[in-house]
Image (cartoon, rainbow, N blue to C red; front, side, top):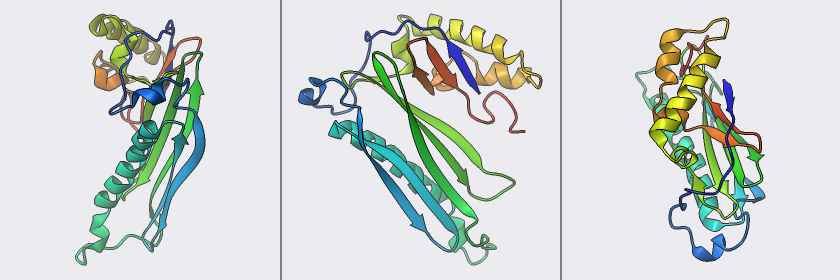
Length: 210
């Protein structure tokens, strides 16, 4: 589910990425992609296919790489049951994780949108989104940086989002009221364009999977 909300783009109230070096921030667009890296692994039970961008700034590249690797490691933990002799093994090649990304840009920001799709057994797989937005100076922009007052800002966004979602044919009020309530955790996935900001809701957040 994608919800677009008008937002005046600004570079105010941004925060530094962890351990960013000042020399990298002196050059515009340190988050600009220069290469694409991947993690691929195949066993009898599972397939791993993960991609992430390599960018101009080393510290940002490490941030992006760490995300991809953490998801792969979590997948391996979640599927460790395949090595238990008392549990029926998965069908050959059945389990999987796929991580891909796209970039969205505005005049003052670049956002990498990661989509992680996993199947670790059960009725169906699951998909979730992780976004990382950077200013042209390489500062990581979080949800709280979009508003001068995070409480007031999220309340405004939440009211708008709930009203839009309730227009859906299969709108579920309980799911919407919970998943789109005005708390930061509900609005972590977003990207900025010159026209505004778009929030992304993953399966189960504002509606049942079906």
